[in-house]
Amino acid sequence: MLVYVATYPRSGSAILRDTVLLNWHRATSNFYATATWPEEITLLPSTLPSASPELTSYRHKDGPVRQMLASPGRRLLTRSMRERLADSPEHFFIKTHEPPPADPVEGEVAIQLVRHPAAAIISQWKLHAATHDACPPLPHFWEGSDTGGRWDRYHLAWGAAGMPLFRRRFEDFLHAPMDLVPALADFLKLPHPERPVMMTAEEAKARNPIRNPIRGADGWMAQISVAELVQLWNRHKMVAKEMGYGMMGVMSPFTPPPQLVYGKKRALPVSPVGSEVMDLPPREDRVVAKPVATPAVF
Image (cartoon, rainbow, N blue to C red; front, side, top):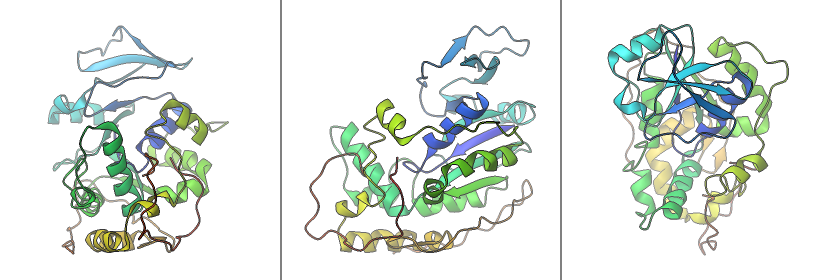
């Protein structure tokens, strides 16, 4: 099985990857760059019968020896490689912020956390500012001119990809984090762990305080003006409303649609035109209304 960890930037990709690693000893390859691994992962010489230059052998803690796609995966995921991994009884995970493949293969699936568009986009903007010498203005990100493209089109594309999709809101995960483990186990047909494990917010912050600052669920509101929020929301509201979001946060429950048959793509509707990383002073015209209360975020 080939599993795309297909989450829009700053929306919980690390949560999914950590959950898979901690509970099932399975690492996630990086689509973009050579991955850096925690100390608990040991890379091994490729001695398995199925060894090939495209695959890397590894062990997580005291788990079994497994294989993953070598990083960066962008240059390796040809149609033939996708078919090979999708047909395998093993699970191969790869992180991506790209749109789905145009020609889904049976055995490919996707797992995805979705975050409120303003929270995700502002967090992406602030992370870019913290890690680059120059940073484009906020509209650059809400118009989709950076990694992931436009928030609405990204989620529309994966929802219509023609492959099984596990989709859960980031905000729902925060309210009930341990529910993620059995839900993923059922979707991926993995064993239910006797003692499910979840990385804590404190552990995530200690590992990477720039990417995981834990500023609070409403921290994005101090970084955007009312006029900017209205513009951002108008770009993405059609898709966001379908997921139970309002302009200020979560407004209603979200039930993902039924799973699709391979190759049976949904028609994409026409999209309307219309973080917490840095300690920046609040804007004078900041948004003051509050969404549904949620715990601290990554």
